[in-house]
Image (cartoon, rainbow, N blue to C red):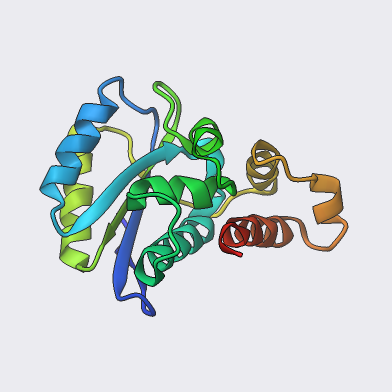
Length: 180
């Protein structure tokens, strides 16, 4: 597995893993992982709502910044992360778009102030779920699907330039507009 990514400005580390399917017992698994990760946060989201590592890192940056600056919309960082990933300030809509779906591919996102804590959480997840892989950059089709899931107009976005980069920029912009 890849080393945790450091977000220098916030002094945090982020690890993200794609899992082949969200297990039926994911609420219990998530509660267990959260209790073991006293120095961090763990969230499982719908893989179809994630457009690669840059999308995750931006979303984490935005959610953590919101908490640090006091403009968060929800009481828990993990829930706030769903809002940013889904590009909406409505929690029910965020759950529909980015909430984990049992039996479907998921993404586990680990946030910690400590690199070793991220690595340990990855190891623990690997011991409970088989088939995990690192997050890769999205293909053009995957990026389009994430944008469609969020209700973005793909043709208007792609008229502005190169496919994947432009779509990722639109997703990032949508997540940042939550706080404006």
